[in-house]
Length: 288
Image 1 (cartoon, rainbow, N blue to C red):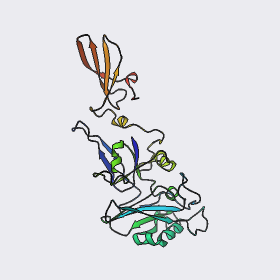
Image 2 (tube, rainbow, N blue to C red):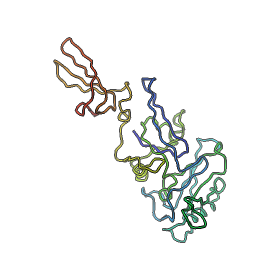
Image 3 (cartoon, helix red, strand yellow):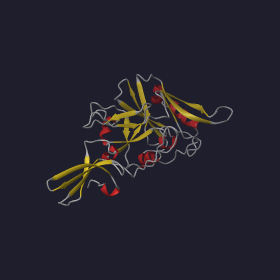
Image 4 (cartoon, one colour):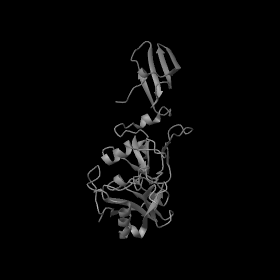
């Protein structure tokens, strides 16, 4: 199993085609509820400390990477903008200073506009908050974009409401990075690397569209078979008691748990019995 992130405005729905075509488990990586088709907004209010580097120590905290595709949705390119340039205080960069730096960048301004939006009554009267919005200049049918997780994004939080989901590793084929590797790639989700501090923090802090924690832990990665949760008859585990007469085997679907239905197979000489059985903790085994 792997954690994936969805940076776009539509849910990713992956159907795992197994042996039983009457039951096809669906795995969903929710959409980014912090954006629309053509714009994205920050969730963290300023001012912003853009000194130092991100949690991985690889990208300066004042550098924002924006990846876009024009006309051909698989041909991604990245613009990097120093959003802290010329700020009066690098450890307290204002939203307006970020907006000014974005719009002053030639490659950015050709494709996007940045401005401050009003939230919770924010505006000239000083109430509520003012947050940064980036909007593409072309229609969604011609242009797509997302914000990379490194650098300034860690502080700004454009992706703070991006969907995070647990999906079988099979769906790695539908990531942006594997768009040319698999012909059927949907080019929609990003693989989160639990070896990266930036990505691990995204997993640990993942929330739903209401902002409630999903209680994911980057140090607890479930295997693909665990995600099946006993829903497929194609993969099963057999717990054999090792005896000869009678011999008892408990057979259950991969990922099933305590209280789930299983089969108890009893062999006593020439007699063979297959009976329904309910799993208890002692029945459960784990692959080596």
